[in-house]
Length: 401
Ligand SMILES: C=C1C[C@]23C[C@@]1(O)CC[C@H]2[C@@]12CCC[C@@](C)(C(=O)O1)[C@H]2[C@@H]3C(=O)O
Ligand SMILES: O=C(O)CCC(=O)C(=O)O
Ligand SMILES: [Fe+2]
Image (cartoon, rainbow, N blue to C red; front, side, top):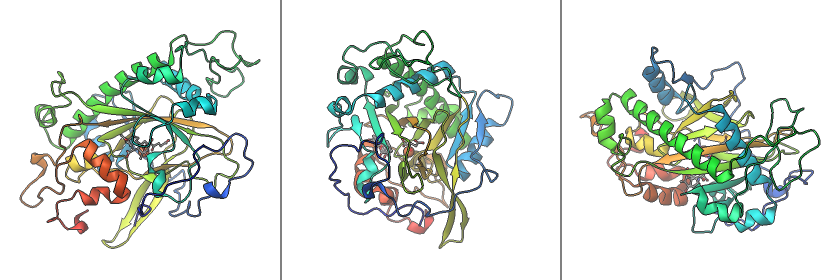
């Protein structure tokens, strides 16, 4: 068994997040007994592939296919997203989490909503709380700006001179630190930065979707026609997406705390920016004798300017199980406050996702039944790691997956 077992969702009693900054030890509510459920691979071991999208002459499609089949995740470079934008979005993320708790709670995610501040949705499947906070932005960031940034001030953050890498540290509501550069480094508002980032991610996600479908053997026309969401005209409404900001404060005892518990994303694909701080681990299955699987956690090392791509559950459905969604988690650090930004990309809400006809053959019928993204999210919200199995066609044996 690779994933933690889903049980009935738990209602955690702590309405407010703990004050991560001031605690000196990990409280029992946040102490995880099973952080070492699988060994962690050494840095010298196999690594999640790095694919340079700008290398047109090389076998990028083959690399993609291999990465998706064997890992369900890869890093991309040469993606064309400007480094300056990545720095600004990191600053926006740090700024969001640096807001006073009462301001963050004003933007708390309602029980029945998607957007807002709070714990990861999957928290309810675990008896312990995670060492993280999150902001989910569905729809336009401008809708959130009124609560989070009443004046939507310019992103006046400062580069601190003595940091190893220039780090955007402080936002407009805090004073300029004494060792900061004379002038704030940017004058765009947070919502503008987020809007710009979403647009860049959308273009990249469409490009990757197209390439991944072609790497499965579809022609470009088939890839665009089959799904209808990635074509140039976006007639069918284009893809939809949710932006997830994660914050993992420094932790006094990282061996006992979990940043984000093991999960797969309920997306077609996720584009993750992890800034320059390590924390993401993917589960690599190393041995599978049919009954037992052996696996190990592999750290995805931060690479300047790179983005991580996770295959999500819906892509597993679309590819009829050829590309598998990756189990991943985030661990925390004693010294670095890590933030990450995930662009979680799915089909338009009304579109059914089902195994592509060309990938279904006489020897291999469709493994999954058609589902929309909202339907699947609702199943995931109830069954967590059993969600994919529950949308398999009944005639397909569970052994197949
Ligand atoms: C679209 C979505 C995917 C997500 C659930 C959500 O409705 C909005 C938040 C997303 C997120 C982000 C952090 C990890 C994750 C597992 C979670 O708890 O909330 C994902 C959800 C998912 O992929 O299932
Ligand atoms: O912070 C990370 O590295 C992982 C975040 C993640 O898995 C998510 O937002 O779905
Ligand atoms: Fe994730």
